Amino acid sequence: MDKKTHRTGLEGYYAVDEKNRKLRYGYTTGSCAAAAAQAATRMLLTGEKVEEVALQTPKGILLHLLIEEISMNEGRVRCAVQKDGGDDPDVTTGIYVYANVSRRDAPQITLDGGIGVGRVTRPGLWQAVGEAAINKVPRQMILENVEQVCKEYHYTGGLDVQIEIPAGVELAKKTFNPRLGIEGGISVLGTSGIVIPMSETALVASLRLEMKMLVEGGQGAVLPGELTDAAELLAPAPYDGLYRHYVEAQIHYANGELERYNNAMALWNNGLMTLRDYWCREHLPRRQVQALRLC
Image (tube, rainbow, N blue to C red; front, side, top):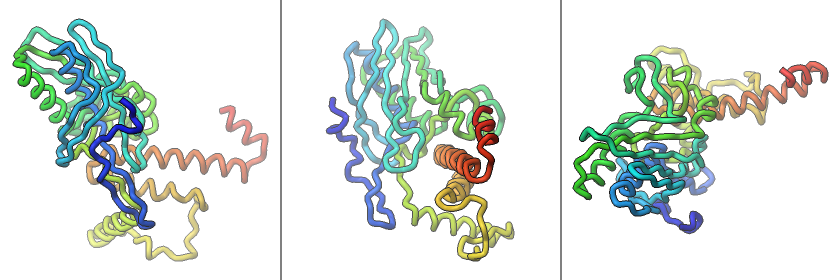
């Protein structure tokens, strides 16, 4: 199928920003994993190739997702769905999320993470220490889709389902997953299955509300409107966008939205590296800049 003409079911869904521009909705890594698992299970039980699946999301939107990278062997099927975060600033857009499904002797469906899916190393997250970083809702979506296919074909045997995100190994280095106690890859996330892009106006309004709540709670936060013109930021324009990404990340982290948190922190890290390069060019002798680059 042609990706350019394929309709996912999100064509009529947009957010509108302050310049009246339409921002496309997208879908989460959890939706990709569930769709890939559904397709792999169907191919395993029927022996027939599947090129597209329908996936009902918790948001209530029915997705139609293309299945790619298909590998069919006796007793095992592997396939992938490509992530599309819409017009939200999303570092995971374009990556492939794979499902590897195989038969097992015991009549049970197991779910685990493979390469590029992080592993929990500290207590305090939803998953137990040692488990794959597949959050509660995506985990439910994956298992429900696999179970539904098994019922459809009256299959009562066992299956092993493994989610893989090969690009997640490198991508995780740009996120704060290691600081959260998630090692080796990224998390499979998404509470609604859908990525709703946030306009700049909506983001600023959200930041003001969060800060207002902090002030009223006695935490002494300063509202953006209370900053004076005399206040000088260390990062000058056009590099000052990194402040926004950092504050946005802290709000997402406080709200438990780890996917948005990691996206914001990746953008902040990129902005910090760009600022560093600018500062070296403008303020350090050429020899020192070259030495820093060699380091």
